Length: 130
Image 1 (cartoon, rainbow, N blue to C red):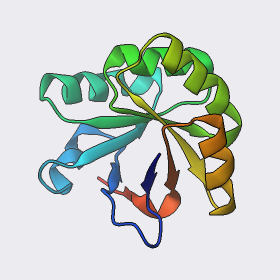
Image 2 (spheres, helix red, strand yellow):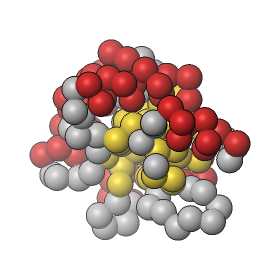
Image 3 (cartoon, helix red, strand yellow):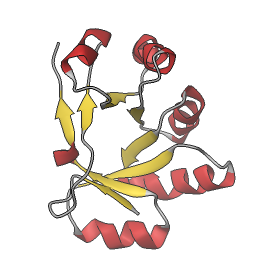
Image 4 (cartoon, rainbow, N blue to C red):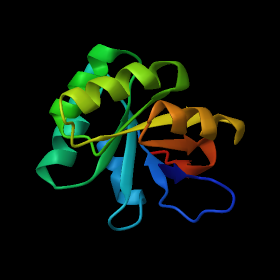
């Protein structure tokens, strides 16, 4: 199980952007984080065309499928959706890893028993403004 933003485990940061110009404000080789939406498809296309790794925050199983097909490295979602998303990811052999948003260390054990690829604390997400 992968942990991002845990207080005792050093991990990569995710840089949350809202537009293509914000990418220039992130460190070289950053992992970009953005919300999945139809309005962000141009940003996603830019990331793919430039071989930039990215994570997509999704709100439904349909969006989980879209995120995998769009080439996301990580699919981030709420804890309540994680178990179903992980089953689908395992069944279809997704390349992307499923990450559940968590606020408490107490959630780690439950996610581990459910076989979720990883967890992300809000501390791991750095908001970049344009």
